[in-house]
Amino acid sequence: MAIEKQPSCDDPVEPALLPVAIALQRMQESVSVITDTDLLALRDSLDRVLAEDLKSSIQVPAYTNSAMDGYAINSGDLPSGNNEKTLKVLDTAWAGKPTDVKLKAGETVRIMTGGMMPVGSDTVVIQEHVRVEGDQITIDGTTAAGRNVRQAGEDINVGDTVLPRGTLINPAELGLIASLGIDQVHVVRRPVVAFFSTGDELRALETHAGKPLGPGEIYDSNRHTLFALLTRLNVELIDLGVVADTEEATRAAVIEASERADLVITSGGVSAGQADFVSKTIEALGELTFWKLAMRPGRPLACGVVNGCRFFGLPGNPVAVMVTFYEFVQPTLKMMMGCINTSSPLFTVKSATHIRKVPGRIEYQRGIVSTSETGEQTVTTTGKQGAGRLSSMCLANCIIVLPAECDGINPGDPVQVQPFFGLV
Ligand code: AMP
Ligand code: MG
Image (cartoon, rainbow, N blue to C red; front, side):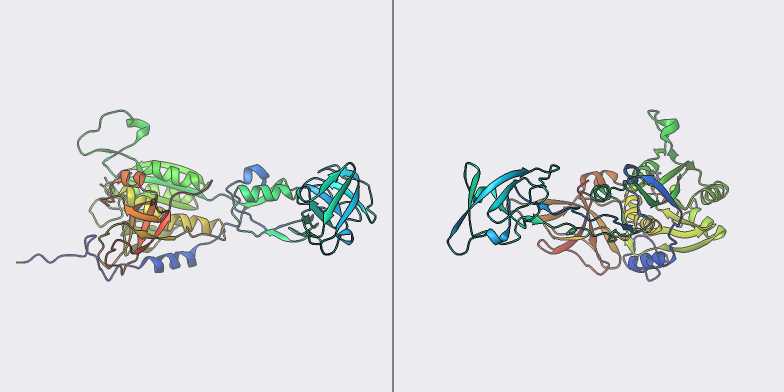
């Protein structure tokens, strides 16, 4: 008699699988933003999220100044047509050392970039465009009135919202806040994230580093990958170690984690195997929102709520951990922090090779974007895409996102990629 096959990870199309976009939307609708705030010294606010609109109490630039090294003049002194005009140089205005000369017709002041425009001037003729003879310069009429001058308040005015709440403070924001004379900011409290690994085969580095593994044992790497991913997001961490594949141990760990954290992440034990207790435990103690997704890797991903604490049971395979983290956990954490921008950038580049894919599930393949001799960017996969091959993540510099309906890629076809790299 033929074996009646059950749905599995091997099936490309499985009607019960939830599309990723719907899963993300459900999650978005149910996330609550953290309302507690911290008042931090400016430098401590790097990589944190602004909890309030940041308004300026000053105008930037604070005073009208020169954008170039040159001569401050009154535009009334600009000659017409092909004529030239000679002006008397009375003083020099340095950045930080203004002149108190008040310009009259026929007069000028030498001025440096950032120097405050003297009273009576409105235009700077750059030093390369004048003829200097003793304490006199000669200009022509080619400089437009008002050129090379930065007006007070042209960048920011008093009362302007310079950065809206929900802005992630990166180096540019940190500098901008400093430029307003502000040295303390209100930011959203860091989410507390508890995480643990499940699996009887796992040996923790804390106790087994350097020791040989017994038959069937592996070192626990997921907890370290999660540590790194979470550290980059600047959240507060609670590492709960390795939890055995039993109902009691899983239950105890889930309860402890949900009592101490805003969000819990586990790895392993979310499939339908006999040693998989994570989804059952979430369901028993709280609510399981979804756990089978139309994606590869990451088909089993248990998402739910226990004790008001958001829960992600990630698959055990190391690549699946990273992919589900990037696609689900990272946007969720950013939403919890009230970030305006929660999505990762997607770029379209040409595929350099064939990529095999059957329609049914969205696939996240490891890719390498490189620039050809002609300057065109193309992407190739890192080769075999097994979800256990963490080395493929190290080789890759991007994830190639292939939509569910895609039935394979030919060389030259456009594909979407999520880059791992960026400016600091
Ligand atoms: P599971 O989802 O528990 O069935 O695990 C799937 C695969 O991922 C198995 O081969 C596990 O041994 C492996 N795995 C699970 N947890 C970890 C971990 N923390 N570190 C490395 N590999 C793991
Ligand atoms: Mg397991």
